[in-house]
Structures are given as structure tokens and as C-alpha cells.
Image 1: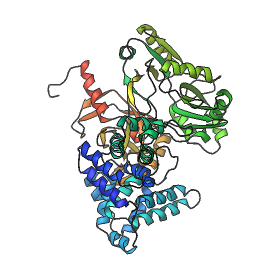
Image 2 (image 1 turned 30 degrees about the horizontal axis):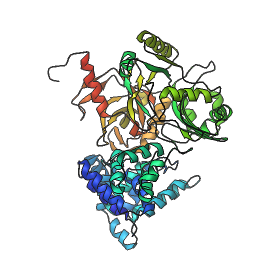
Image 3 (image 1 turned 180 degrees about the vertical axis):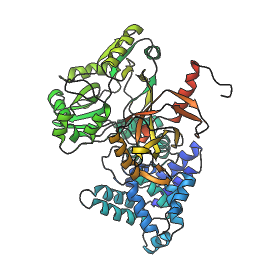
Length: 564
């Protein structure tokens, strides 16, 4: 019997009601076991708040403005019901459920004599994603109305969460890996490794169900299927990096650019952003450089792209983001904003995975196969003075700082650890998400120019405000930000709008102080936005745990108030 979408929604209701991880994984595992093979990947993706597998380039492109418009039309009640419910819960899905409970939509769904299945929901989502070009918004609205008109309140709750991409139930990817292992009797390490190299736990789950642990353990990278990135932690000084890496490390320039993963097979090249989005069309000169210089028939390499001026000097990050967004008149834009590629790692060559090799060996392979594409500036040293000199040289050349990479470190996709370290000594920065904004004053009276900034709770997925700022953006960026936030607005409170947390910004600050103003008990002092990070998703934002760790670390150098 086909799996009903309602059973998926009811699972998530139970997950939300418990904080016990063993119970969550047990319930998820039992649900996965009941699914047909073709239902497994769609179900896992939707449970995690995704319409499609993580590697897929399909997007729904449904704004909150579009979704809320459809909801208002089909609900037929005062939209104040939603605003009141959202004010009480802070959760879009929960507020939508309240709206549906106050309407006769459930009765209408029964009259249609059709129930939503997991497979049918995926098919409708694919149709929404396929609606592009002239008239696409109207077609998307019709499809959204069709799916929501068949939904019960609990189904509508989780459909809304999938549409806005914000599930936040407590069943995150790590617990899903545990559930898959339990459901299909596969060692957790095998599931985690397969998820790491394949880049999507939904597909891993489907293979685990149909082919078992033997085939799963044999899966490797696929060219043109982007894999998760290895991530770094931050340290304050080169001394910290040297100590963490046993006294000797590889130091590389940390460019103020955008990280890319480049895949090549024959003459075909594809470039993926940090968010694993295909940006190939926007960077034709990078494609040509890879075709010309990397002779391997198959390769996956990583690098950093920076925007430069006529003299080859790096220019601010926001100009580079204009290149990544451009899909029309690209040649013209490439003349206005030239880019330069620096490579720093090789993950696959001629069909052979390199990720288990020590970093220095991967770097050597990269150097032998990069042709004339420059590699990131690098030195290997155990001398603090030499390391500090290189740091000063990097900063003097207009770059952000240094990366320190442990010499024998393998490449571990999707993990953030101390094998790679970021050294950014000039300003403390955090990647935060905008949750709300206020209209400004004077000439800014029609712009949303004062932004609430939040860090992510790694356990619950909730975004907790840690500060507010009106500093850092240009007038043009504020105007664009105003439009983006209006499309994400779910509630207005006088001069303030509350938005779905989607936009990531890099925020510089002087220190973190204790504050009763925010739920987390902390606030950034002198916060200002340094970059709009469209290359990062809300899941990439810094966590409240990291903010708290930095807050506590400050007291290694200064005293506390007695009340702390």
C-alpha cells in the first residue's frame, strides 16, 4: 500500500513532541522500514525539510509571498488568524496548521476522495520546480493550491515547512543516519561514510533498503554529483594553529572569495558553489581554464574564486557575488568583474578517490595536474615567526588571513573539525541569519535597514537573536535587502517585519556581552555587516554554541562581573 503523506506528517508530530534521541531514531527507523523502495529517498528528503535530494539542482522557487497568497485565498478566513498563531509559536508550519484547523479545508479534501501519498507529493513538487518562464508564477500557484486543498491540517503544517525549507523538528541529518542504520541493519559507520561520499542521506537510505550494506560500502564519488565540503574551525593566532597541529602545519592564504568544487569529465566541466548549486553558466572563464589546464579525463578539485581589479588586486566579496548570480550577459559582466581561480585540493583523479590520502600528498597530486592554474599560496612551517610573517603578508595583500591544514589530514566531507583551521585575526566575525528588520529613519524611512541577527541552535534548529545592526550595507544593498525581506515577511509589528530566516550575513563585532534582552542571554557589541553571504545557507550559519564558547573564552583575558 502506498505510504500516505499523513503518516510522514504524524511521524514528525511525534518527533517534535519528544527530545529523546533514541526514541526519535527508533520512530524514524520503524517508519522507513514500512516504505516501498521508491518511497524511501523522497520520504527522507521531506522529513529533513527538502523537496529534493541534497545534490539535486531542482528548486521550488516559491517565495513566502507566493505561498502566503495561496494560503489566504484557499483558507477564506481573516489572515490575522495566521499572524496571531505565528506570534505565539514563531513557526510557519504550526501557524498554517492553526489556519487549516479553523477552515473547512479538511472537509473539502475528503470530498475529493483523494489522499496525498509520499509519491504524489514528490510528483507535485517536481511539477512546481519544472514551472519556469512566462506564466510560471501562476502555474506554481495553481499547483500549490492543488496540493494544499487536499491536505489535512497536520499535512499542511509540514508541506508549508517543506515549501519554506525550514523543518526544525529535531530530526536532523545525524539522527537520520542513525535511523537508516537501525532500519536496514547497516553499521552506522557504513551509513555515515556513504552519506559523506554520496552527499545525500536519502539516496543512502534507498540503497541500504534495496541493496544492503555490501553495496553501500562500495559506493564512491560520482563526477557531477557535488559532495559535501570539509569545513574548518577558527583559532585566534598562528600559535594556536601550530599547537593544535602538533607544532607544524601547512599555512595557506585565506582569500576573500567564494569556495567552489569543480568537476570535470572529458570536455565537460561543472562548477558548484559552497551551497552545492551549479554556477557553471556564470563563470565561463573558469570553465575554459579548467578545460585547458586539467588534462585528466575525470577530476574533482576544490578552489577559491576571487574578484579582482584591472591590476589583479582583490576587490570586495559583494562584487564576486554579482558574478555568481549572473546568467545573462555573462561575457559583459566578466569584463566588468574579472575573476581569478586558485586551487587548493584534489578529491578525485581518473576515477580514483584521493580523500583518504594525507593533505600534503593530495596537494602534490593537485600541483602535478593543475597546469597553469595557480594554487593557493602555501608554506609548511613549524616556526611561529615565519607563520606570523606569512599572515602579515596575506593581510597586506588584501586577503582575509590564513588557513592552517594538518599535514596528514584526510579530506572528510561534511565535517567541521580541527584538522583545518581558519586564522582571521583582524576582526571577530560570525555568520548569522537575519530574522527580522525595522524600517529606518530620515532618508531610510522606506527601507528595511535595521537588522536582527541570529545564530542557530545546533540541537533544535531554532534561530536565536544575538544582536541588531544598521551598519555595513550600501544604499544599493539595503534596497535589494528590503525587497528580499519583504518576500520573506511572515508578520508585521508596527515598524518591524519578522522574516523567514533565509539570508546569511557575515557580521563583524568587537565582543560578546551578557544581555537579558535576548533569549540566549548574550549580545554582540558594535555589530556591523561585512558581507552578504549568498553562498551560504542558514544551515551554514554559526551556532549559538559557538557564540557561547567565544563569550566564555573572552574571560581568559578579562575578568567577569560578579553577577556573571
